[in-house]
Image (cartoon, rainbow, N blue to C red):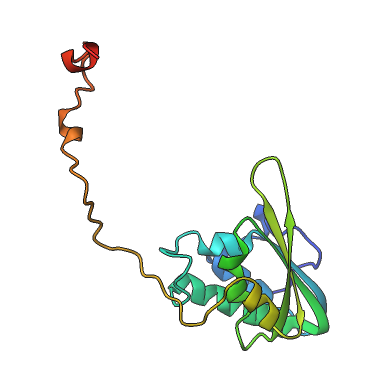
Length: 176
């Protein structure tokens, strides 16, 4: 793949119709040779994880895909290079992925406060991931599976008694 460097790859002219966005991202990163000083991804990890059932399940197909992308980022970075990831997700959801043992990255987390949703800038460089693991409560054996068969202990029959088709008030509500 021969794509210009320092281009906005979100523009339509760079998308190959035969590939999904994820395949395109992997194809793009894999096409680079080692020696890049800086890789910057803004909300890319967020978009790859949007369909994951649980942010805690690091073995989901979405998390495994992100791990693959991160290994490719590590491969293309030159020694001493930096990887910056900008995310809306809380650090305790991202740091476990960024502290994967094979990456051997130190992780620095910076919070960017806004009037609405806060964002986080995570800066990775070669180094010890231990302090980030400790700061964000990372544990390698934490797996929370989503509840596939939701059960509620509440009596939900009240929904059957709602009359949403009528403009008339129920006598029980008018007498209060």
